[in-house]
Length: 463
Ligand code: SF4
Image (cartoon, rainbow, N blue to C red; front, side, top):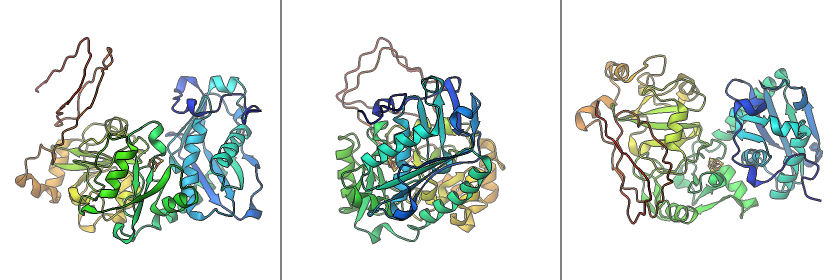
């Protein structure tokens, strides 16, 4: 009997990456319209967990009105001789992968930011209870992470219960994140790599150091250490630092070697603390992005929760499309909120002195980590709404970026880098691309490339 014979839909890696559009969805749990949502893993003692127990607090899937979205919480409690607190973050991150294995089920993001959708088709096939999701998760977790000896699940859709646990979860995430604060990259001999997102961004690898949290905001250096120890052949592994090649940019010989191997030669070098040249790659799960604004030679920051347009007129989704996919894109940099709290945050590019705009919500969250003398000089959507207003604001507040305007031309990012494409065959149907953010140009150099195209039109339009 197959492991999932009693589940009415398929379960397997082939379903990963399915997208469920609004018109095809039976229900949505969490998501951008729902303020209360979370997923949380907690390590418990052996006698506190009943293996395989699945509890539902609130309405089950079959009782939720079709086409609607709901508050949602998933609490997973695990126990085992080798289980420690530091494993919670990594076990939690696997929920994303395993739920996406279910046919007609989509899971996006992590922690307090989750969005889950069940398709009408899979619901009609009989996937109508959280009990089935729990069974799938139980089997996958226990087969993939054998150090989990006992596991139990609590699914919540009751608003009051979700609210109560949401607050607890935020405190737990914060205490996890704060552990590595105060530690320096120089204090350790090894970093950790995570290749979990290679299923959809094959050249991406997160390099997790004490001062650079994983892009998704779910895995710290401590989490990496605990996971690599208990599951050394798993997707989270040790990276010996090797020789320090550039202190300011954060380039290490050992990191370069690992990224070369893991990206099959596609990415040759990574500099951890810059968004130019050889920036850390971005998969698509990042909590936020830094994006270069050439008109003022500074960076904007935007997080996934920000729904409006940023100061240059682009929203998070567009910026994220320009950033994601495991590439190194000059001036576009996926990052976690916790990394914004690091003293090495964009250190080679000027750190906070180079940040010229960010959403109010994220500014509030991290204001204690922004240098005091710059905090009020960084505008949000409440202060400015376009680039003209931004320039005036920065001048009025005497933001340190203003002194750069006379020193450097405000149109060129630093160190433009050649991107080489080994072999490239373009499909006949080329997607048409409607333009880059204002002020950004592209240079394409293809070496040893073979290109087949029926038609390709490149137009430069000057305003
Ligand atoms: S974003 Fe990075 S750390 Fe997080 S799951 Fe993906 S590869 Fe791993």
